[in-house]
Length: 128
Image (cartoon, rainbow, N blue to C red; front, side, top):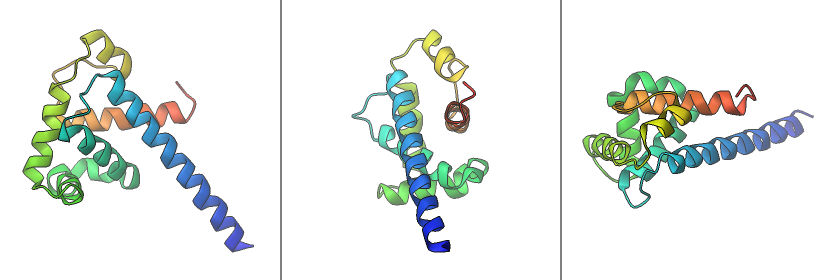
């Protein structure tokens, strides 16, 4: 019986992670972040890492950037810079930023990723 329960939990977790990844994509798309930038993929990777370990947001330089960089075969400094560049390259106006994330630019990487994660968690919880 435990094996069945574990399989069900695994499926639910996979489904939850897919929903989370879809919401990440939706927000990136709404903000008009260009898909051809390395930072676009790195934001998606960072959000996936934060989904698996939310406490990484408190250790961006020590944990999150190195994890993202390793996945993309880059240096942590490049991951940080690419994410920042993607955020700055957003084509959305301030009203769209306010609507999607509840804030306007300028916004730093950690604030962007933390706010994005919180918005998604609230939406998936059915509160918003």
